[in-house]
Image 1 (cartoon, rainbow, N blue to C red):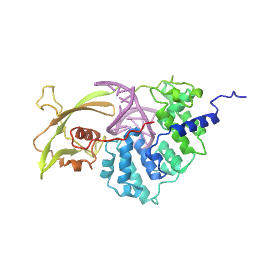
Image 2 (cartoon, protein in one colour):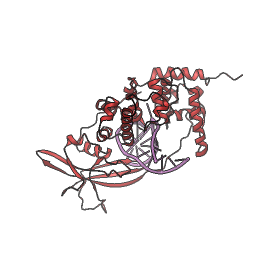
Image 3 (cartoon, rainbow, N blue to C red):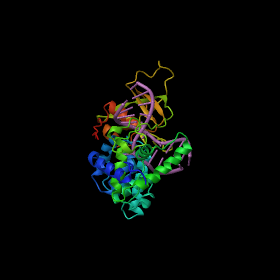
Image 4 (cartoon, rainbow, N blue to C red):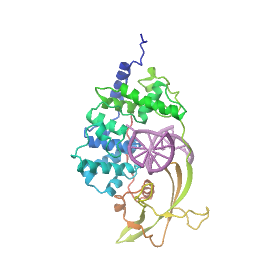
Length: 348
DNA sequence: GAAGCGTGGGC
DNA sequence: TGCCCAAGCTT
């Protein structure tokens, strides 16, 4: 006869669901039952923090309130709405998926985990999240949060990558085993919420954890470190002119062949200065910007002379509707060319 | 299986 | 300040 402990599944369920009832954050995508809106939220939330998603999510649904509206939009408009969120492939695939639904499909979001998996940009986790939250399908949604929570709860994990991969497959099975078949959407969200607000990667708040008593590691679980970032220097040109009484800024469009941010708009790059004492003059703005594994030190310098062939003069109003890179947006905001962002901050 | 893909914010 | 990411997917 097994010893009775708080790790009994009945207790795990009650403890987590009670905790979630008390502590769940009031988030916009938890106020809707619309599968389209839930889908949009899941794509935006991939590798992206809740706080960063709140305002773009609101604006995106206002601009593209239905899957039909999204399918009918120009890709450039979708990218413009995605500007600043990063991982722009997500926006392109979301757009393509919407067109797929509206042309070959019947205009309704696919109704099952298996059917959702057919959509571009929807993988195992996202399909499970949408199916369980929007339709109540009993499938476990295992994201980075759930992975971390279960690895720590069970004391699994290894520095050996092969062994670790084995543990991750075990996590999938464990998540499926633990899934609450009555309310799978609530359960999945509760698991993710626990990882996002209590079982944090670096400093877990174990004192606030409903599963503390049954946890195998209680904050002692190590996580692997990533490779350090390198630093590079980049200069960009800031050139404005007056046309018809309107101030215009010179932007260029990145090549469609670029692997990073293809087709998006940015400030014209300038050659790197050979030394600190250069002919380029004093920067009007300096900032840091990290892209992938590189820390960029950026200088924005006032430019003059003819525009490059691929350049385009735009007003602030136009720029606000274009697919700008995050760096271009950041520089333009700092220099007063775009409105400062007011982001609602939600606290647990 | 590993690499590639962005960004703003917390500590 | 500099480092570390965060509700992954595709190739």
